Structure formats: C-alpha cells, structure tokens
Image 1: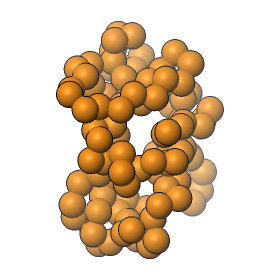
Image 2: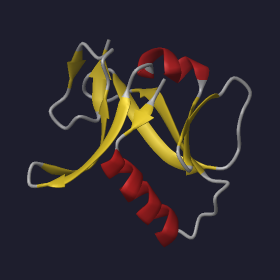
Image 3: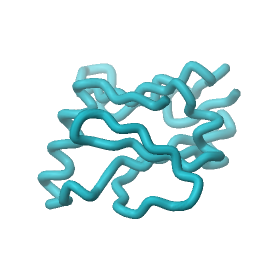
Image 4: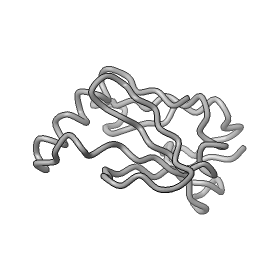
Length: 108
C-alpha cells in the first residue's frame, strides 16, 4: 500500500485546483533509474490507468503506481512539507537503505 498524509493531500488539492484538473486525475508515483543514490522518485498527475497499475484510494484521491515501481514503493508514505528545512513532496520509504541529502533518490 502507498499512503498520503493530510499535508500532502491538501497540497495535491491546491495543485489540482491551480491546474484546473478534474476529478478523473490521480497521483501517479514511480521509480526511475538515476539520481545520486541509484534510483529516483517521480510524481505527476495522470488520468489514464495502464495494465498492471496498482491503485490506492485515499478519500477523494487515488495514488497509482506501476507494478515494477511498487516493488520499491510498497509501504511508502507521501508527505509534504513547506517548512524552513525544505519545501516539497517527500517519499517516506521504509524500503530505502540509503537516501541522498535532497531526498530525491534512494537505494535498496
């Protein structure tokens, strides 16, 4: 399962409103090769479900992840912070054995 915090949910709602995205849009998260730790996180809005996608409903929102990425993201919590230590979405991934300083890449 992939979950989302209340802070991240609020930010997603703001972004959807700014982009004028309808209720058919959901959050797509994935993992790509690269970054200083070997794998990097990716997040975007999408409105098309693909074969093999894993879906995780959260209230009025849905998080979708392809099966390959889910192997790395199972149990991850999507969070958002706008504090002094950094602003943006963060992946709290229990599978990561190492992360880079910016939090955008990881290793397992």
